[in-house]
Image (cartoon, rainbow, N blue to C red; front, side, top):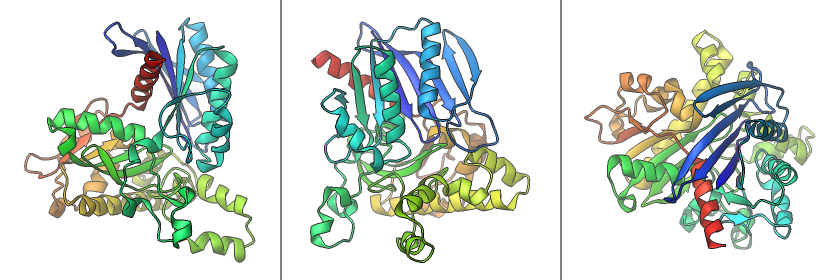
Length: 400
């Protein structure tokens, strides 16, 4: 059995095909990633394919995730890769959908109703699901949801300071996202450090080319997360502003005449790194420009790092110390400059970075980048959200 998994980032599309072995393990046989999907960047969009020991690059216009998914399915067809089931990351399932579930004609309207809850992710995931329903026939399709990992967040961390009748509404609580990634890196960190998950305290920084967040994790469960009721809050991201004084959207409406829809577009699609730098949403490009002397790029990097350090310090306080600080996803795994800047000055808090180890880390495997005397381990841990989704798909297929 082969399970195809699609994972929509806000500006990327990850894809893996896993083969289910007789042992029950899942072996990846195809990996693909579409870059710069529907965003402004200096580099043209493209898709990388890795299959049967070969790497292929496809340069193609990728105006949206549906186009990217169509190009990937075309490539799978031409490579004669069979697909027996498909799993899809769905960032926000609202109040009704939490655990991985099979997509049916009955619950598809529920998924569609959740589109506004994560405007950069849910509509993209829905578009990819519809493409798969059209192209892959009657094979089982599954949706996996990010907030499930954060479901046990304590009430004092998941509630907002609103009046009682509003505070208890499910739409008015913090959910937290990137849960599939945090689930994977928590287990991998526990394995690497040989610490039982139930005793592990860690701060995980999921830093992607689209969305980014940080989480405080204790005993295998989230106790706090930088994102909120939607993925807009928290860290500065590629096109999202992150934390913002709530009066600013009100001022945009009341004083400058913005409509609520225009405010939503501004904060989700025109802010963050692209808004600060003025030329790109890609942090790798911005770091290179900053090192070449660009002041807008330097400001974007400095603002990004400042916000990240604030959350690292806050979550150290929430956890009362921790065993490990983990960097994951594209930026976290491959941008040593951001890791170095984020850890700089944190030695009094127990984070002592080994700059040489940090700069030489490949990002392709779990590696320690702290000095031996560091009380807190600092790790680069590659995430694998797709494997988490594929395991859930296989489990549900077996239960059926």
